[in-house]
Amino acid sequence: MPPSTVVVLADDLTSAADGAAPFRRAGHRALVLFEPPARLGDGVTAVDLGTRLAAGPDEAAARMRRAAGAYAGADLLIKTVDSTLRGHVAAELRAALAGSGRRAAILAPAFPTEGRTTVAGVQYVDGVRVDESAFARDPAHPVRTADLARLLPEAVLLEPGALAELPRLVAKGGVFVCSARTEADLDAVVAAVPRPEEVLWVGSPGLADALARHHPRTPAAPRPELPPAPRPLAVVGSANPASRRQLAALRAVAGAAVHTPEERGTEPGVLLRALVEEARRTVAEGRADGLVLTGGETAAAVLGALGATGVELYDEPEPGIARGTLYGGRLPGTVDERADRQAREDRADREDRADQADREDWADRVDRDGRADREDREDREDRADGEDREVRVDPARREDRADPADRVDWEDREDRADGEDRQAREDPADRKVRRAGGRSAGEPDGGDPDATEAGPRSTATPDPSGRPGNTSPSGSSGFSSPPGSSGPSARPGSSGVPDSSGASSTSGLPSTSRLPVLVKAGGFGDDGTLVRLSALLAGGAR
Image (cartoon, rainbow, N blue to C red; front, side, top):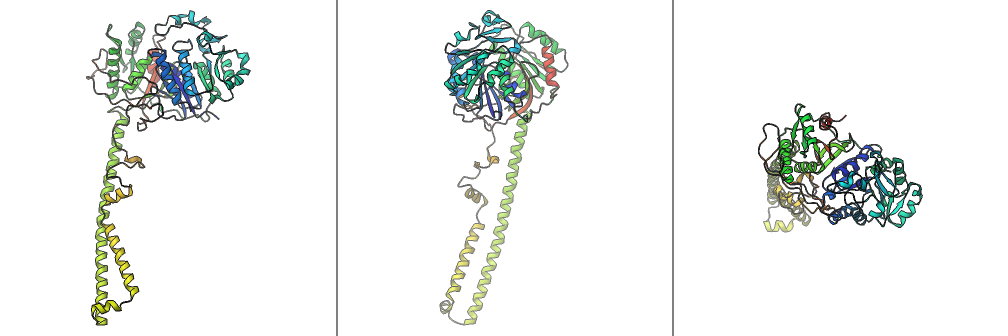
């Protein structure tokens, strides 16, 4: 039976998308999120915890531990690592293992289809040790060692021929580094673990591929609707020459809207905020029907400004490219916001009509019951007068001579009539309060989903990732933009995230705005990449 819930804890957007994409291909629903969700749905949920950009290993470990603890109940729990060992590999692995409470961690960082292999516990890229490759000079996270035994002294190293020992070792607990040169080696690692839910899986997209192949979903979950976006907005957060060439090629395509830094020497944070505000306003004004985002930090900032928490994955048309629809978005002026406002107005109108009908029905009942009561009293009085004339006795003696049973029956009818009269005269609003268990008029009934108050659906609560929340972009734009752009406008409230207990602060948030989006987290290849990505989004589902 395939796992119901799969969680991928990633250190950046690239890892999150790469971890989710194989499961989408294997038939699972796949979400790539920038904020940890309050609850897990079926399928794979890949969360970018942003630990690659953390101030240091301690901060990265704290975020990872909280997130692993929050989602320890997932059927499959996967911690991604870069296949070149960049980032806080050891600190995050230890933190995730401790937070998850899992018995053991299996580390398999090989990604054979991209030339990254693990041989005798040493990581290679295209046959070169990663600490002797260009990744050793990475400006943010230079790789200091390719030797996993040195990186994780507590780990046990396992070659492909020793995997028969893996079940026994996992039962004892610990950290195990599995060498792999081929995809078949990674498949063997996954197949060797009899109870995958007891293990923290740590690896690159190669391991995610193997896990997805071993746990397909049949029948496949339906893909999200992906409408064509003939007017996509390409957002490029880089001013390097390769980006300039890409933008020049894209500008030659009619209808393409591009935003890119034009001012060199400006502080990067200022440029990013202005870029994000231009993109937000362009979407809000309806001048773009899709997004092409390049660069993980830029993509996260733009989607956050649109009120989104991530992307529901449609597919991975090329390695490192996530295509899907905006997830969790709510932006004033968009289709979702207008539809939601119309729904609230329709509901209020229905309630007004129901209240009017209730009042009219109440008035009719009062009038009808009043007439019946008067007629009944007159009839009783007429009968009493007839009896009085018939017996021709003093009223006091007549009462004494009346049958006691008749007196009791008459008094009982009088009591019931009085009760019905009081009920008929009760205001409908009071009856509504009484039925609701004492709630005041207008107060939402917790059992009625239509009684929820309108207004903002999310509030800020502590983030298990420990990552600071989004900030409102501001400042003047130093970027090229389509004609008709106006000044910065107010941004809607940012969406909330749960605390480590899993308490929801986004349960009322609409699930998605369905804006098509394509995210490329890495750099550019050839000069036609941006044009090709825009064409992929413009074509829609195919």
